[in-house]
Length: 118
Image (tube, rainbow, N blue to C red):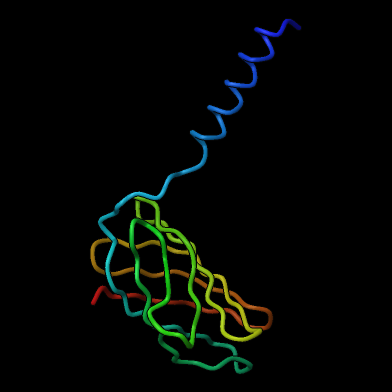
């Protein structure tokens, strides 16, 4: 393979990686959200709530008690990780307009969540 062919292949691979990785962009979901967390398992605490913020599609926590991180796509799909101390939960779902819902799971628990824009 010639040097030109190698350079062309490298640039094509780089372009495909960049196109496959979504960039953070301002979304219609940016703002402050209240999230209610529920579980039907007796091993889990039921009825918790957390406040999160979304800025340019990036999720962050609004309190020091819970660390939130994740991403919201322009279509509204969301993935988020919440952690406090050594506890960690991962959630997936969809936002639409000023509300959303989905599921979450942790080491010994799982459940559902709903969200409302403040």
